[in-house]
Length: 325
Image (cartoon, rainbow, N blue to C red; front, side):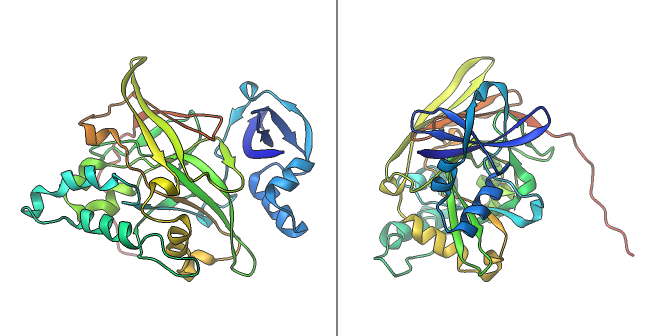
Protein backbone atom coordinates (compact mmCIF):
# COMPACT_ATOMS: atom_id res chain seq x y z
CA UNK A 1 0.00 0.00 0.00
CA UNK A 2 1.32 3.44 -0.95
CA UNK A 3 1.73 5.71 2.08
CA UNK A 4 3.34 8.79 0.52
CA UNK A 5 3.87 10.49 -2.85
CA UNK A 6 7.05 12.01 -4.27
CA UNK A 7 7.34 14.33 -7.27
CA UNK A 8 10.58 14.12 -9.22
CA UNK A 9 12.35 15.19 -12.38
CA UNK A 10 14.58 12.97 -14.52
CA UNK A 11 16.07 13.67 -17.96
CA UNK A 12 14.01 16.85 -18.24
CA UNK A 13 10.67 15.14 -17.58
CA UNK A 14 8.36 15.22 -14.57
CA UNK A 15 7.29 12.07 -12.79
CA UNK A 16 5.35 10.88 -9.75
CA UNK A 17 6.32 8.04 -7.43
CA UNK A 18 4.72 6.31 -4.47
CA UNK A 19 6.55 5.09 -1.37
CA UNK A 20 5.31 2.03 0.50
CA UNK A 21 5.62 1.38 4.23
CA UNK A 22 9.15 0.06 3.69
CA UNK A 23 10.27 3.20 1.87
CA UNK A 24 10.46 1.50 -1.53
CA UNK A 25 9.62 3.80 -4.43
CA UNK A 26 7.39 2.86 -7.36
CA UNK A 27 6.90 5.00 -10.46
CA UNK A 28 3.17 5.72 -10.87
CA UNK A 29 1.57 5.56 -14.29
CA UNK A 30 -1.11 7.85 -15.69
CA UNK A 31 -0.11 10.99 -13.76
CA UNK A 32 3.07 13.06 -13.68
CA UNK A 33 2.14 15.33 -10.75
CA UNK A 34 0.43 15.02 -7.39
CA UNK A 35 -2.27 17.41 -8.54
CA UNK A 36 -2.97 15.28 -11.64
CA UNK A 37 -3.41 12.17 -9.50
CA UNK A 38 -5.57 14.02 -6.97
CA UNK A 39 -7.93 15.23 -9.69
CA UNK A 40 -8.16 11.72 -11.10
CA UNK A 41 -8.90 10.25 -7.67
CA UNK A 42 -11.64 12.82 -7.15
CA UNK A 43 -13.18 12.09 -10.56
CA UNK A 44 -13.09 8.32 -9.95
CA UNK A 45 -14.39 8.51 -6.39
CA UNK A 46 -11.25 6.91 -4.96
CA UNK A 47 -8.83 7.86 -2.21
CA UNK A 48 -5.45 9.24 -3.21
CA UNK A 49 -3.67 6.33 -1.51
CA UNK A 50 -5.99 3.80 -3.12
CA UNK A 51 -5.51 5.13 -6.65
CA UNK A 52 -1.74 5.45 -6.17
CA UNK A 53 -1.58 1.83 -5.04
CA UNK A 54 -3.20 0.76 -8.32
CA UNK A 55 -0.71 2.66 -10.48
CA UNK A 56 2.65 1.04 -9.67
CA UNK A 57 4.72 0.72 -12.86
CA UNK A 58 8.21 -0.27 -11.77
CA UNK A 59 10.77 0.46 -9.10
CA UNK A 60 12.50 3.84 -8.86
CA UNK A 61 15.86 4.64 -7.28
CA UNK A 62 15.31 8.04 -5.68
CA UNK A 63 19.07 8.68 -5.68
CA UNK A 64 18.99 8.90 -9.49
CA UNK A 65 16.38 11.67 -9.79
CA UNK A 66 15.93 15.27 -8.65
CA UNK A 67 13.31 15.51 -5.91
CA UNK A 68 10.75 18.31 -6.13
CA UNK A 69 8.28 19.74 -3.67
CA UNK A 70 5.48 17.20 -3.13
CA UNK A 71 2.86 19.67 -4.42
CA UNK A 72 2.86 22.52 -6.90
CA UNK A 73 0.52 24.20 -9.35
CA UNK A 74 1.05 25.08 -13.01
CA UNK A 75 -0.08 28.62 -12.11
CA UNK A 76 1.66 29.54 -8.82
CA UNK A 77 -0.92 32.28 -8.21
CA UNK A 78 -3.45 29.52 -7.52
CA UNK A 79 -1.40 28.08 -4.66
CA UNK A 80 -1.61 29.86 -1.30
CA UNK A 81 1.01 29.39 1.42
CA UNK A 82 -0.09 30.38 4.93
CA UNK A 83 0.26 29.23 8.51
CA UNK A 84 -0.58 29.50 12.18
CA UNK A 85 1.58 30.27 15.20
CA UNK A 86 1.52 29.72 18.95
CA UNK A 87 -0.19 26.37 18.41
CA UNK A 88 2.25 24.06 20.21
CA UNK A 89 2.87 23.30 23.85
CA UNK A 90 5.90 25.40 24.73
CA UNK A 91 5.67 27.55 21.59
CA UNK A 92 4.89 30.68 23.60
CA UNK A 93 8.10 30.49 25.63
CA UNK A 94 10.52 31.78 23.00
CA UNK A 95 8.04 34.30 21.61
CA UNK A 96 7.24 35.52 25.11
CA UNK A 97 10.92 36.13 25.85
CA UNK A 98 11.21 38.21 22.69
CA UNK A 99 8.35 40.52 23.62
CA UNK A 100 8.27 40.60 27.41
CA UNK A 101 10.59 43.59 27.79
CA UNK A 102 8.29 45.73 25.69
CA UNK A 103 5.29 44.63 27.72
CA UNK A 104 6.58 46.18 30.96
CA UNK A 105 6.06 43.02 32.95
CA UNK A 106 2.51 42.34 31.80
CA UNK A 107 1.43 39.20 29.98
CA UNK A 108 2.36 39.62 26.33
CA UNK A 109 -0.06 39.29 23.45
CA UNK A 110 1.86 36.13 22.51
CA UNK A 111 1.26 34.53 25.90
CA UNK A 112 -2.40 35.55 25.91
CA UNK A 113 -2.85 34.06 22.44
CA UNK A 114 -1.17 30.83 23.55
CA UNK A 115 -3.36 30.56 26.66
CA UNK A 116 -6.49 31.17 24.59
CA UNK A 117 -5.51 28.23 22.40
CA UNK A 118 -4.69 26.07 25.40
CA UNK A 119 -8.17 26.73 26.79
CA UNK A 120 -10.26 26.67 23.62
CA UNK A 121 -8.22 25.30 20.75
CA UNK A 122 -9.58 21.75 20.89
CA UNK A 123 -13.38 22.09 20.84
CA UNK A 124 -15.80 19.19 20.89
CA UNK A 125 -16.68 17.61 17.56
CA UNK A 126 -18.93 19.83 15.45
CA UNK A 127 -18.00 23.11 17.14
CA UNK A 128 -15.47 25.82 16.33
CA UNK A 129 -12.84 26.64 18.92
CA UNK A 130 -10.89 29.83 19.48
CA UNK A 131 -9.21 31.15 16.36
CA UNK A 132 -5.40 30.93 16.20
CA UNK A 133 -2.80 33.41 15.08
CA UNK A 134 -2.77 33.36 11.26
CA UNK A 135 -0.27 34.63 8.71
CA UNK A 136 0.22 34.73 4.94
CA UNK A 137 3.55 33.73 3.41
CA UNK A 138 3.01 33.93 -0.34
CA UNK A 139 1.93 31.99 -3.39
CA UNK A 140 3.39 28.88 -4.98
CA UNK A 141 6.44 30.76 -6.25
CA UNK A 142 7.94 30.88 -2.73
CA UNK A 143 8.11 27.10 -2.27
CA UNK A 144 11.61 25.64 -2.30
CA UNK A 145 12.41 22.03 -3.16
CA UNK A 146 14.53 19.66 -1.03
CA UNK A 147 18.22 20.43 -1.48
CA UNK A 148 17.60 23.82 -3.11
CA UNK A 149 18.79 27.11 -1.64
CA UNK A 150 16.64 28.91 0.92
CA UNK A 151 17.31 32.55 0.17
CA UNK A 152 16.65 35.40 2.56
CA UNK A 153 16.06 38.79 0.91
CA UNK A 154 18.90 41.32 0.79
CA UNK A 155 17.01 43.47 3.31
CA UNK A 156 16.40 40.60 5.77
CA UNK A 157 17.90 40.80 9.25
CA UNK A 158 17.73 37.05 9.88
CA UNK A 159 17.01 33.78 8.13
CA UNK A 160 15.83 31.30 10.72
CA UNK A 161 14.41 27.80 10.41
CA UNK A 162 11.05 26.66 11.78
CA UNK A 163 10.52 22.88 11.62
CA UNK A 164 6.84 22.20 11.00
CA UNK A 165 4.22 20.00 9.40
CA UNK A 166 2.13 21.54 6.63
CA UNK A 167 -1.28 20.39 5.50
CA UNK A 168 -1.75 20.18 1.71
CA UNK A 169 -5.24 20.86 0.31
CA UNK A 170 -7.13 21.02 -2.98
CA UNK A 171 -10.40 22.91 -3.32
CA UNK A 172 -12.98 20.91 -5.28
CA UNK A 173 -15.33 22.19 -7.96
CA UNK A 174 -18.10 22.78 -5.40
CA UNK A 175 -15.81 24.68 -3.03
CA UNK A 176 -15.32 21.63 -0.83
CA UNK A 177 -11.89 21.36 0.80
CA UNK A 178 -9.98 18.11 0.25
CA UNK A 179 -6.92 17.36 2.35
CA UNK A 180 -4.39 15.57 0.14
CA UNK A 181 -1.94 14.86 2.95
CA UNK A 182 0.89 16.31 4.99
CA UNK A 183 4.44 17.44 4.27
CA UNK A 184 7.49 18.12 6.40
CA UNK A 185 8.47 21.76 6.11
CA UNK A 186 10.84 24.57 7.02
CA UNK A 187 8.57 27.59 7.39
CA UNK A 188 11.62 29.98 7.47
CA UNK A 189 11.16 33.41 9.05
CA UNK A 190 12.97 36.61 10.01
CA UNK A 191 12.94 36.45 13.80
CA UNK A 192 14.91 39.66 14.31
CA UNK A 193 12.27 41.68 12.49
CA UNK A 194 9.54 40.00 14.53
CA UNK A 195 11.40 40.61 17.80
CA UNK A 196 11.80 44.31 17.09
CA UNK A 197 8.04 44.82 16.99
CA UNK A 198 5.29 42.21 17.06
CA UNK A 199 3.32 44.24 14.52
CA UNK A 200 6.09 43.37 12.04
CA UNK A 201 5.19 39.67 12.26
CA UNK A 202 3.52 39.91 8.85
CA UNK A 203 6.77 41.26 7.34
CA UNK A 204 8.83 38.53 9.02
CA UNK A 205 6.75 35.80 7.37
CA UNK A 206 6.99 37.06 3.78
CA UNK A 207 9.82 34.70 2.98
CA UNK A 208 10.41 31.47 1.13
CA UNK A 209 9.46 28.12 2.65
CA UNK A 210 10.85 24.66 1.96
CA UNK A 211 8.87 21.44 1.77
CA UNK A 212 10.23 17.95 2.29
CA UNK A 213 9.90 15.58 -0.67
CA UNK A 214 7.07 13.40 0.71
CA UNK A 215 3.34 13.94 0.75
CA UNK A 216 2.17 11.70 3.59
CA UNK A 217 -1.26 10.29 2.75
CA UNK A 218 -4.05 9.62 5.23
CA UNK A 219 -4.12 10.95 8.77
CA UNK A 220 -1.23 12.54 10.65
CA UNK A 221 -0.19 10.53 13.73
CA UNK A 222 -1.15 12.39 16.95
CA UNK A 223 2.43 12.27 18.27
CA UNK A 224 5.10 13.23 15.72
CA UNK A 225 8.71 13.42 16.90
CA UNK A 226 11.62 14.76 14.91
CA UNK A 227 14.89 16.65 15.01
CA UNK A 228 16.00 20.00 13.66
CA UNK A 229 19.68 20.72 12.98
CA UNK A 230 21.93 23.41 11.59
CA UNK A 231 25.24 22.46 10.02
CA UNK A 232 28.09 24.95 9.64
CA UNK A 233 31.27 24.02 7.79
CA UNK A 234 30.19 20.38 7.83
CA UNK A 235 29.70 20.15 11.60
CA UNK A 236 26.52 20.32 13.70
CA UNK A 237 26.19 23.88 15.05
CA UNK A 238 22.83 23.37 16.75
CA UNK A 239 20.42 20.50 17.22
CA UNK A 240 17.14 20.03 19.04
CA UNK A 241 14.27 17.55 19.01
CA UNK A 242 10.85 18.87 18.13
CA UNK A 243 7.36 17.59 18.81
CA UNK A 244 4.24 18.10 16.76
CA UNK A 245 0.95 16.36 16.05
CA UNK A 246 -2.25 17.03 17.99
CA UNK A 247 -0.95 15.39 21.19
CA UNK A 248 1.66 18.17 21.38
CA UNK A 249 -0.54 21.03 20.21
CA UNK A 250 -2.96 23.45 21.84
CA UNK A 251 -5.24 23.35 18.80
CA UNK A 252 -6.77 20.45 16.92
CA UNK A 253 -5.97 20.24 13.22
CA UNK A 254 -9.69 20.51 12.49
CA UNK A 255 -9.86 23.81 14.36
CA UNK A 256 -6.86 25.23 12.50
CA UNK A 257 -8.32 24.08 9.18
CA UNK A 258 -11.73 25.59 9.96
CA UNK A 259 -10.29 29.00 10.83
CA UNK A 260 -8.33 29.10 7.57
CA UNK A 261 -11.00 27.82 5.21
CA UNK A 262 -13.90 29.67 6.83
CA UNK A 263 -12.92 32.54 4.53
CA UNK A 264 -14.67 32.07 1.18
CA UNK A 265 -11.67 33.48 -0.67
CA UNK A 266 -9.73 30.36 0.39
CA UNK A 267 -12.36 28.02 -1.05
CA UNK A 268 -11.93 28.97 -4.70
CA UNK A 269 -12.39 25.84 -6.85
CA UNK A 270 -9.15 24.45 -8.25
CA UNK A 271 -6.86 26.26 -5.83
CA UNK A 272 -4.19 24.50 -3.78
CA UNK A 273 -3.24 25.44 -0.21
CA UNK A 274 -0.13 24.73 1.85
CA UNK A 275 -0.90 25.57 5.48
CA UNK A 276 1.79 25.36 8.18
CA UNK A 277 0.64 24.22 11.62
CA UNK A 278 3.33 25.88 13.76
CA UNK A 279 6.25 24.75 15.91
CA UNK A 280 7.62 25.00 19.40
CA UNK A 281 11.30 24.78 18.37
CA UNK A 282 13.61 27.33 16.72
CA UNK A 283 17.35 27.94 16.99
CA UNK A 284 16.82 31.70 17.31
CA UNK A 285 15.29 31.17 20.75
CA UNK A 286 18.63 29.60 21.77
CA UNK A 287 20.62 32.62 20.59
CA UNK A 288 21.76 31.12 17.28
CA UNK A 289 22.46 33.56 14.45
CA UNK A 290 22.49 31.84 11.09
CA UNK A 291 24.72 32.89 8.21
CA UNK A 292 25.11 32.14 4.54
CA UNK A 293 26.33 28.62 3.90
CA UNK A 294 24.61 27.09 6.92
CA UNK A 295 22.55 24.01 6.09
CA UNK A 296 19.18 23.31 7.70
CA UNK A 297 18.15 19.70 8.24
CA UNK A 298 14.71 18.60 9.44
CA UNK A 299 13.57 15.02 9.86
CA UNK A 300 10.63 13.35 11.58
CA UNK A 301 8.77 10.09 11.69
CA UNK A 302 6.67 8.99 9.87
CA UNK A 303 8.43 10.73 6.96
CA UNK A 304 11.13 8.57 5.38
CA UNK A 305 13.07 11.38 3.75
CA UNK A 306 14.70 14.35 5.48
CA UNK A 307 14.54 17.97 4.33
CA UNK A 308 17.87 19.77 3.79
CA UNK A 309 18.46 23.27 2.42
CA UNK A 310 21.49 25.59 2.39
CA UNK A 311 20.98 29.22 3.42
CA UNK A 312 21.83 32.03 0.99
CA UNK A 313 21.11 35.75 0.68
CA UNK A 314 19.77 37.48 -2.41
CA UNK A 315 21.56 40.48 -3.88
CA UNK A 316 20.32 43.95 -3.03
CA UNK A 317 17.85 45.33 -5.55
CA UNK A 318 17.90 48.95 -4.46
CA UNK A 319 15.01 51.21 -3.56
CA UNK A 320 11.70 50.26 -5.21
CA UNK A 321 10.15 53.33 -6.82
CA UNK A 322 6.75 53.77 -8.37
CA UNK A 323 5.85 56.15 -11.17
CA UNK A 324 2.59 57.77 -12.17
CA UNK A 325 0.90 56.37 -15.25
